[in-house]
Image 1 (cartoon, rainbow, N blue to C red):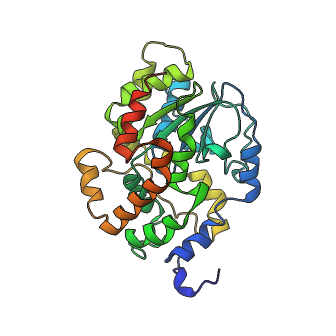
Image 2 (image 1 turned 120 degrees about the horizontal axis):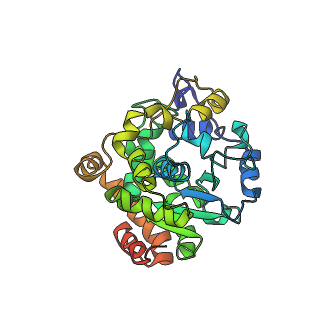
Amino acid sequence: MTLSSSDHAASGRATSPDGLRALLAKFSSKESVERASAFRPRDSDVFVATYSKSGTTLMQQVVHGLRTRGDMDFRDISEVVPWIEVAHDLGQDLDAPQKAAPRAFKTHFDSDSMPSGGRVVYVVREPIAALVSFYHFNSGWFMEPGAMNLERFALEYILERRGRHDYWHHVASWWPRLEQEDVLPLCYEDVVADLGGAVARVARFMGVPEEPGRIEIATHQASKAFMQQHPTLWEDARLREYRNSEMGLPLEFKSTKVRTKDTGDGEAKRLDFVTEAVREAWAERWAEIVEPVTGCADHAALRARIAEMGPH
């Protein structure tokens, strides 16, 4: 790939799709990803598996809160619930003891790339909402703010991520596993709509003790209001310390994973600027990849199917 000065700003952030691809090629090392694939989990380990910006941080907090009964003594949620694909790059040993049992991990691997073993909480989110969240997440950290609008980001960057790195393949790869006993499927929208109910389901799936107050504590600490009160805990401090310099970015460049408008009317208002070209491209890719595997014409149908799978 030949880059020009127009692909990056003076800040080091990307200003074009090619610049973003080049920058994020240094996000993690090949060795770190290979070590994650070769990891051998314990049967009791719990993975939070998602496509990017689909409720990962929220579910990391739920799982950690449940297993510790509310421990908040950490500076970054991914220090206590490690992201397996980058753990080696961040000096984290996946086999090391954790604060509490069961051990817990985060992953964006598709099903085919996942190490065998353990249990999985799989969270899926409506694809346009995930796209918009991913756009805002990149802007200010990896992308120069305002350099690329959402349509260009979507059509020239995201649609080019064919195979195991795209949203649609991720959903299709996990679908055959969602009714297995070692996988708990959840829709992000349902988790947000009934957080307490979702936390209770995760607790049963994890097999944590049903002690008085445990569900209530974990639910409170995973609420939007609580997470907004502690923004630095969700800003990837360790990842920035170890990888920003590798990407040629200053340490202070970061993003936030807890936005102010993610549900209800706020969600609708935040998505109404998505262009028709993007919506059509997203629907076409769903029809091409997801519908043949799931039989679901859109996310709403898939959400209904997952609800029919019943509680674990």
